[in-house]
Length: 102
Image (cartoon, rainbow, N blue to C red):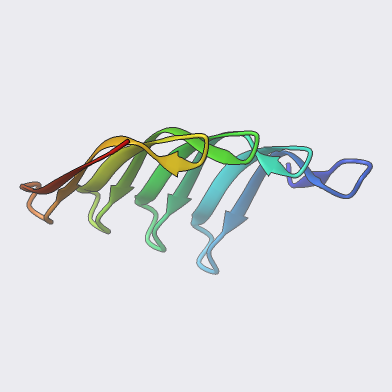
């Protein structure tokens, strides 16, 4: 956990914590680039957002959450660029906006 490769780059699973001891974020690195699921957490421990990385670029589903745990946004990435349908939600879970990116 939290190690560097021979070139001084982050490599393998990494975790950081808030000063209260709760997990702040976790991610895997390959030769200094994020690779795999990245998750960030609110100070109180609930999930803030999650996104997948492939060789340092966002790829696939992205979800962001209100601090009480409700979904606030979802969309997707291809090669680090927002792509396709994204949706925004209010704190009660009501859909409040949609956008489509090519």
